[in-house]
Length: 183
Image 1 (spheres, one colour):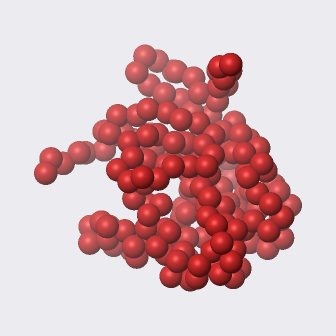
Image 2: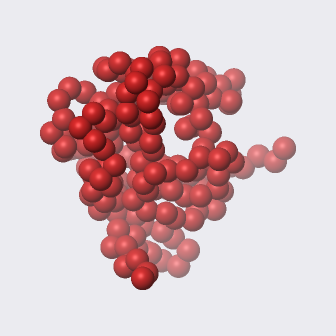
């Protein structure tokens, strides 16, 4: 049985992709409901994943704040990126023994997830960590896989995809061309 076509993606013109971030968020909410138990803690990766975790925490009626995890200190490209534009890690729960659902906007190479897992383990040893993402764009460089992805898309390496939000909190995607430097 094949999956029905996704109403959340539509082509604007040949070669361009338009993603409905709000429709994908609704799908993510459904997926998170099926993944979590009563003890699951939400943790979002700064910044897009943190926005998702914050909104999910509210939409699921969960008490307190969602955790925010920064990848900045454990990135393998720290020397180029530094700490610019990075939120600090905040964990409003005990990490040891916790069931954690990690949230991110876009899964690409897997390097951010690796860095965030290192950051998380600096605070303790969770019982389990699962990953839910809004978009999985493929292109993995590390063996990382999401337990749930609201959508899977293919983009050329020359484009970046990131979640953005309006002042009112509505989600949308920014697709940008990036310069690829040869080694």
